Image (cartoon, rainbow, N blue to C red):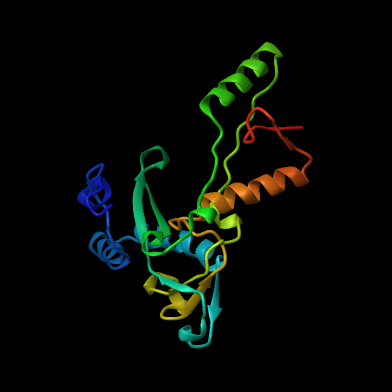
Length: 200
């Protein structure tokens, strides 16, 4: 991970990409704007809703693991070079049992068959995006994090992670399970041929 292209890349579209929150604020000061600051401010309310402040001693959190997190920064070309920030938990530092991390994914063949069925029956195809999808699902791991500068008034506070934070090993499985429950409540049923194709 440390050798991935993200950490090697310093610029995108000729613009400098920060590798930390402090560097993001530093770039804004140099450029005389608040583009990265705004990106952080847009991301953090979603993260604050995914954690709960803990006022006790972290040593009393039996069964919990402490994790760290960091911001991943990007620039979106198709959105007028909009700056984007995403807070990611360092899930690779936790010991997570495989029983809570496995998640199935719809197969490419199943998607193609569904598209073929739609075409043969002259059905409309609709698509949707679930914004901050993982953060809608409850967290399957017992982890806590200490708030950094990006957390504002929660800086240095002990925060228990209650939602499936991006970066945690169990988050994909947690979201898949939560989505399946939601689809079931809406009257959809999982197909026998592919459990990730839902029918109503």
